[in-house]
Image 1 (cartoon, helix red, strand yellow):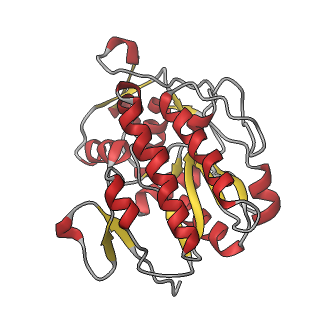
Image 2: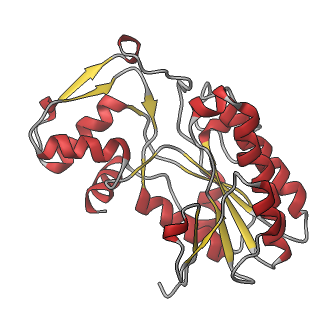
Length: 268
């Protein structure tokens, strides 16, 4: 696409020509940090995303996810950089279907409350002179890590794998999300946008669809209830999908269909 990208890392060993050190857990480091570029677009996606971690230590996680993120945002804005904040469907409680971009936040978890606070703080810092975009995501899957990668490993080996049949997601693929984020950045549009799957499904249904897309035997998926395990599930949305009315109208991007989503996960 002809785009030049820089990343940030907390690990000294990973710092290079295209990556700079940035530790959101260090207030002193954030206060002295300077962007390697002026102008362009910064995607704010670092933070503590574990719902359990946020519940266990709201003060420490809020310091990273809210206070230091907003301090960083202020410095980036002062450098003439446009901001795109990655947020989450956790800003809603999941009780109502397809909450759109203009719906009021109703978080049910500490992580969701922190995301809401960051969104509101960013809009306040930016004001009308420095438009920012906020992109909320439903559950993102990739073949390189996480649950989809684990499912694919089992299916490739012909092994049975368990998947919850009492927890719902609205899955999207990483390529779909990346294309959507680039479209938002290039458009110059500000405000809140959503990227979501077009269908809500259980993790067991997701695993079954992924198996079918890979040409594996769907019987390899063993549905099970999360309540029968030691898993601590702190967010159980009945409706994890997001409405995309504004995204459709302004950028022509529709929710990702399951067939496309499965193929993109496999190809990626």
